[in-house]
Length: 149
Image 1: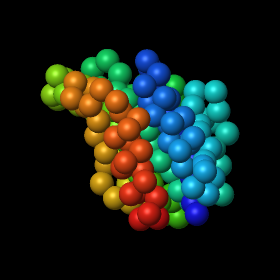
Image 2: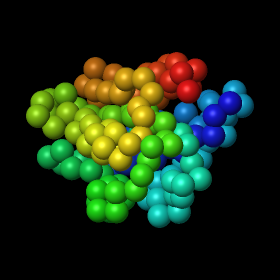
Image 3: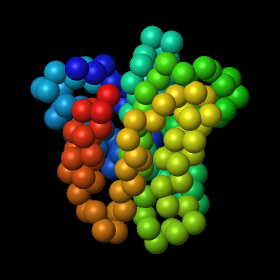
């Protein structure tokens, strides 16, 4: 079973809802899940972690959600070695914003890869216009994702 941290980037609460739902559903399967949101992102010790699931929405014109923006900037600046990290990305967005659809998730995906982390599986992109229940789609994807770890 996996020891997973879920990094949540949210403005309206949808990503938080998805992360909490995944934690509730994956924990009984034997996985250890810790959800990191705006209250505790600074507490992550990547050196002692090996599996990260990013669950983020995109804000405004393609920006990182406010609670992840400082974290994202620190990763870009400090550039820690994340070669020991396996990760996955669940990106929530709105397809009507064609050029910036799921941009925060894509940016974090690219940054984790640049820092040496290994993505497991494909990035899940959830469109608010066509997928009104993101938690169900995320659970289906996450169940397959944890099997690949």
